[in-house]
Length: 424
Image 1 (cartoon, rainbow, N blue to C red):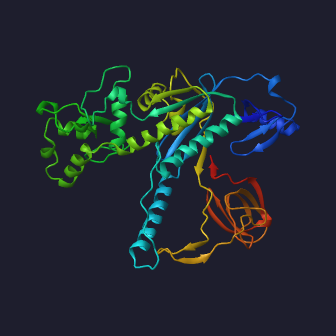
Image 2 (cartoon, rainbow, N blue to C red; image 1 turned 90 degrees about the horizontal axis):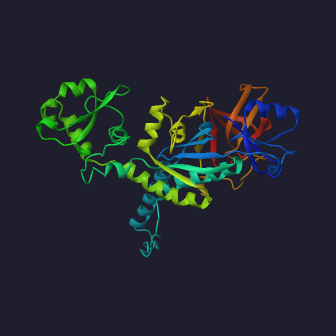
């Protein structure tokens, strides 16, 4: 991936190749601003004396992972995959709610009941959903500072309701067109977890299959469609599903229940994407939108592997992409810790003290450090996210596992804490 470049006033210039960045750093013409994403500054250059090109930031929002890509004239120069912590937030809110409710339902003296006069503002979303919006918005603003981005492309809806007419409710047949089959097939793959509905086979060619055969009065409604492997599809033929799964009552019950269940995750993510779309308008950049079906159509047409960042690269109008590097930056949202005055046991009672010091020996939990240990049992070089202790003995989370008990004397800062961890 390319290296971001800033001028002497910290205005973004065109990103350069890593080899060129190494040469300028070696000659002393550039300095490192930040490591993730890798950014350099040129003290002898200004934006007025340089030529910049148009760059498009492309976003493929997801419930767990969001794909990010930057393209310049159909050439993908940078990509990243942003992993959210929405499910962790949901679990934390559930734990808090249970503890509070248990205190209110016990005969605790002076514990007043919750006063139900709260009103949610218009456009309110759950904190676990808003965290995804904030993560993407944060990185959009960061990338605008590092790269001369002139437009944004966003996958606005996972499944194009204009092309599908929401068949779970209305039952209108999928309309013919250039994208025929892509919207519907992608919807079914998500709904049936990309495996055969009957035998559970994965990583094999899957086909669209009618639960109630057309020959026996079945329809093309989505609630009558499933995904099956070729063997199961041919074996079932025009049999009724009760006859085909006669000896497998548990599978029959699961298939019938799943067929009637709409894709709830898609609805939740679509809600988040509309919120994100409205928030992205604050950047004052033109926003191009596309659907999940068109994204898959663009990707499959170019025989590209299915990854989040390559999905993002194929959002919107795409002719022919040229991928410079297939190694994206992997970003994981970690948050900024907790403000609890103490740690609690599983019942919510205080169990241990937490130090009030934010920094220990110049480090704080969440910093990315490099430790070169020269003596003792743990001789070696370790790079990763640090967890500090008041004693100065730190833990470092590396890609090979957790290294405990590393002295602060061996550690140097690589990247200051910003709420995210990074890897390749």
